[in-house]
Picture (spheres, rainbow, N blue to C red):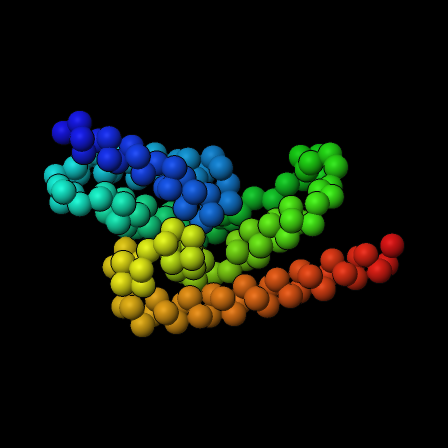
Length: 172
Protein backbone atom coordinates (compact mmCIF):
# COMPACT_ATOMS: atom_id res chain seq x y z
CA UNK A 1 0.00 0.00 0.00
CA UNK A 2 2.83 2.42 0.87
CA UNK A 3 4.58 1.63 -2.43
CA UNK A 4 1.41 2.49 -4.33
CA UNK A 5 1.02 5.81 -2.52
CA UNK A 6 4.71 6.62 -3.02
CA UNK A 7 4.36 5.96 -6.77
CA UNK A 8 1.37 8.31 -6.89
CA UNK A 9 3.21 11.00 -4.91
CA UNK A 10 6.12 10.79 -7.36
CA UNK A 11 3.77 11.87 -10.18
CA UNK A 12 2.65 15.12 -8.48
CA UNK A 13 5.19 17.38 -10.25
CA UNK A 14 4.04 16.11 -13.68
CA UNK A 15 0.39 16.48 -12.70
CA UNK A 16 1.00 20.06 -11.54
CA UNK A 17 2.83 20.96 -14.74
CA UNK A 18 0.01 19.56 -16.89
CA UNK A 19 -2.68 21.25 -14.79
CA UNK A 20 -0.93 24.62 -14.91
CA UNK A 21 -0.52 24.36 -18.66
CA UNK A 22 -4.21 23.51 -19.02
CA UNK A 23 -5.55 26.21 -16.73
CA UNK A 24 -2.88 28.94 -16.67
CA UNK A 25 -3.88 29.67 -13.07
CA UNK A 26 -1.71 28.24 -10.29
CA UNK A 27 -4.49 28.10 -7.69
CA UNK A 28 -6.99 26.44 -10.02
CA UNK A 29 -4.28 24.02 -11.16
CA UNK A 30 -3.42 23.06 -7.59
CA UNK A 31 -7.13 22.50 -6.90
CA UNK A 32 -7.35 20.24 -9.95
CA UNK A 33 -4.31 18.24 -8.80
CA UNK A 34 -5.79 17.91 -5.32
CA UNK A 35 -9.12 16.72 -6.73
CA UNK A 36 -7.25 14.23 -8.91
CA UNK A 37 -5.24 12.87 -5.98
CA UNK A 38 -8.33 12.61 -3.78
CA UNK A 39 -10.18 10.64 -6.45
CA UNK A 40 -7.13 8.44 -7.06
CA UNK A 41 -6.71 7.62 -3.39
CA UNK A 42 -10.42 6.85 -3.02
CA UNK A 43 -10.24 4.52 -6.01
CA UNK A 44 -6.81 3.04 -5.36
CA UNK A 45 -8.16 -0.45 -6.13
CA UNK A 46 -8.78 0.59 -9.76
CA UNK A 47 -5.05 1.00 -10.40
CA UNK A 48 -3.29 -2.01 -11.85
CA UNK A 49 -0.46 -2.82 -9.44
CA UNK A 50 2.90 -3.18 -11.15
CA UNK A 51 2.21 -0.47 -13.71
CA UNK A 52 3.17 3.15 -13.44
CA UNK A 53 0.22 5.20 -12.14
CA UNK A 54 1.01 7.99 -14.61
CA UNK A 55 -1.56 7.14 -17.31
CA UNK A 56 -4.20 6.36 -14.72
CA UNK A 57 -3.65 9.68 -12.92
CA UNK A 58 -3.59 11.72 -16.13
CA UNK A 59 -6.84 10.05 -17.21
CA UNK A 60 -8.46 11.00 -13.91
CA UNK A 61 -7.16 14.57 -14.20
CA UNK A 62 -8.33 14.94 -17.78
CA UNK A 63 -11.84 13.77 -16.89
CA UNK A 64 -11.95 16.23 -13.97
CA UNK A 65 -10.76 19.04 -16.28
CA UNK A 66 -13.44 18.24 -18.86
CA UNK A 67 -16.08 18.19 -16.13
CA UNK A 68 -14.89 21.59 -14.88
CA UNK A 69 -15.01 23.03 -18.40
CA UNK A 70 -18.57 21.77 -18.88
CA UNK A 71 -19.66 23.25 -15.56
CA UNK A 72 -18.07 26.60 -16.33
CA UNK A 73 -19.75 26.72 -19.75
CA UNK A 74 -23.11 26.02 -18.14
CA UNK A 75 -22.52 28.82 -15.65
CA UNK A 76 -21.03 31.08 -18.33
CA UNK A 77 -17.96 31.65 -16.20
CA UNK A 78 -14.66 32.77 -17.64
CA UNK A 79 -11.96 30.24 -16.79
CA UNK A 80 -8.89 32.28 -17.71
CA UNK A 81 -8.01 35.24 -15.53
CA UNK A 82 -6.19 38.31 -16.76
CA UNK A 83 -4.01 40.53 -14.64
CA UNK A 84 -4.98 44.12 -13.99
CA UNK A 85 -2.32 46.78 -14.49
CA UNK A 86 -1.91 47.00 -10.72
CA UNK A 87 -1.30 43.23 -10.51
CA UNK A 88 1.12 43.05 -13.41
CA UNK A 89 4.86 42.87 -12.95
CA UNK A 90 6.47 46.22 -12.26
CA UNK A 91 8.93 46.03 -15.14
CA UNK A 92 8.62 44.34 -18.52
CA UNK A 93 10.91 41.46 -19.40
CA UNK A 94 14.05 42.44 -21.24
CA UNK A 95 15.29 39.01 -22.32
CA UNK A 96 14.12 37.79 -25.69
CA UNK A 97 13.76 34.24 -24.39
CA UNK A 98 11.42 35.34 -21.63
CA UNK A 99 9.24 37.25 -24.07
CA UNK A 100 9.18 34.33 -26.48
CA UNK A 101 8.32 31.90 -23.67
CA UNK A 102 5.51 34.13 -22.46
CA UNK A 103 4.16 34.43 -26.02
CA UNK A 104 4.19 30.64 -26.39
CA UNK A 105 2.38 30.12 -23.08
CA UNK A 106 -0.18 32.83 -23.93
CA UNK A 107 -0.70 31.39 -27.41
CA UNK A 108 -1.10 27.90 -25.97
CA UNK A 109 -3.81 29.22 -23.66
CA UNK A 110 -5.65 30.66 -26.67
CA UNK A 111 -5.77 27.25 -28.38
CA UNK A 112 -9.07 25.43 -27.82
CA UNK A 113 -9.05 23.21 -24.69
CA UNK A 114 -9.39 19.93 -26.62
CA UNK A 115 -6.48 20.76 -28.90
CA UNK A 116 -4.41 22.16 -26.01
CA UNK A 117 -4.88 18.94 -24.01
CA UNK A 118 -3.77 16.85 -26.99
CA UNK A 119 -0.71 19.05 -27.60
CA UNK A 120 0.29 18.96 -23.93
CA UNK A 121 -0.11 15.18 -23.61
CA UNK A 122 2.12 14.43 -26.58
CA UNK A 123 4.42 17.45 -26.78
CA UNK A 124 5.07 18.21 -23.12
CA UNK A 125 4.22 15.08 -21.15
CA UNK A 126 5.76 12.72 -23.72
CA UNK A 127 2.91 10.25 -24.03
CA UNK A 128 2.72 8.26 -27.26
CA UNK A 129 -0.22 8.97 -29.55
CA UNK A 130 -1.87 5.71 -28.45
CA UNK A 131 -1.38 6.48 -24.74
CA UNK A 132 -2.62 10.06 -25.11
CA UNK A 133 -5.68 8.93 -27.09
CA UNK A 134 -6.44 6.38 -24.38
CA UNK A 135 -6.05 8.97 -21.60
CA UNK A 136 -8.24 11.51 -23.41
CA UNK A 137 -10.78 8.84 -24.32
CA UNK A 138 -10.71 9.53 -28.06
CA UNK A 139 -9.64 7.54 -31.14
CA UNK A 140 -6.00 7.91 -32.23
CA UNK A 141 -7.09 9.54 -35.50
CA UNK A 142 -9.03 12.20 -33.60
CA UNK A 143 -5.98 12.84 -31.43
CA UNK A 144 -3.75 13.25 -34.47
CA UNK A 145 -6.27 15.62 -36.02
CA UNK A 146 -6.45 17.71 -32.84
CA UNK A 147 -2.65 17.87 -32.64
CA UNK A 148 -2.33 18.91 -36.29
CA UNK A 149 -5.03 21.57 -35.96
CA UNK A 150 -3.65 22.68 -32.59
CA UNK A 151 -0.16 23.10 -34.05
CA UNK A 152 -1.60 25.06 -36.97
CA UNK A 153 -3.59 27.27 -34.60
CA UNK A 154 -0.53 27.76 -32.39
CA UNK A 155 1.64 28.73 -35.37
CA UNK A 156 -0.92 31.29 -36.47
CA UNK A 157 -1.18 32.76 -32.99
CA UNK A 158 2.60 32.95 -32.62
CA UNK A 159 2.97 34.60 -36.04
CA UNK A 160 0.39 37.21 -35.00
CA UNK A 161 2.15 37.81 -31.67
CA UNK A 162 5.50 38.20 -33.43
CA UNK A 163 4.01 40.70 -35.88
CA UNK A 164 2.42 42.70 -33.07
CA UNK A 165 5.71 42.84 -31.20
CA UNK A 166 7.53 44.02 -34.33
CA UNK A 167 4.89 46.70 -34.90
CA UNK A 168 5.30 47.95 -31.32
CA UNK A 169 9.06 48.16 -31.74
CA UNK A 170 8.73 50.11 -34.99
CA UNK A 171 6.16 52.51 -33.52
CA UNK A 172 8.41 53.56 -30.64
